[in-house]
Length: 262
Image 1 (cartoon, rainbow, N blue to C red):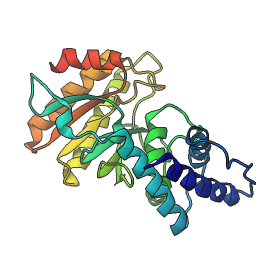
Image 2 (cartoon, helix red, strand yellow):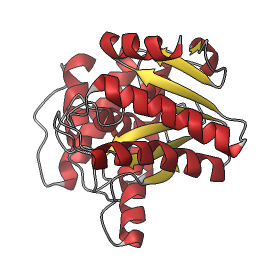
Image 3 (tube, rainbow, N blue to C red):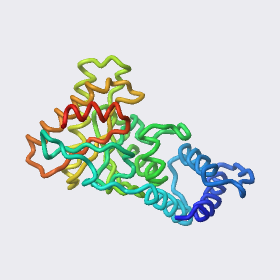
């Protein structure tokens, strides 16, 4: 997708997002894509869970799919197989670019995505590049449920504009740097709940992010150990033909998982 086409799409999408809120868009006709996209992202990050027009969705979908394709889609084969268990793999990169059957999102208990404009968390990235359809789908699930998502449980939605087929959303424990026995049980439950839901949904490849190790403050090494032990134990006990990819973004997390898997 050319920069000119991206600019054209952004200059049509941003005014509609502003108009929904009774805002007036400042003149940005001369702005670059790098200047326009943060504005677009901030507006969708803070947009309520409402239906969007067909014209908006068509433009948004073209933009997001084009940007993801331009970044490069990663296949399961691009990840490194584990030397200790062939069912496990390790991949470092942006989870929104991974074409797994399902990717796991570290959600909050509202399950509506991150509302902080441009925040550098996985929840924000997944909702931004999946599109506004995702927040609406999550809102409908939560309305049907009638209460906030418990820690350690999981929900599944389509992935919309992402190369994955599904997103599995799970709420990890807030450890704040000092995990308790209950936090450890809850973290293991996140992985088991995701795998249970994946198996029921016909998923054969699932990519896990580093659940709870960001702002929720679960120490990375202990979280990784729990993740690998829980996933291996679940696979041993269920006899399901499933590949689990541990997706990391930071070099420090890659080093930790390499020690466990390689």
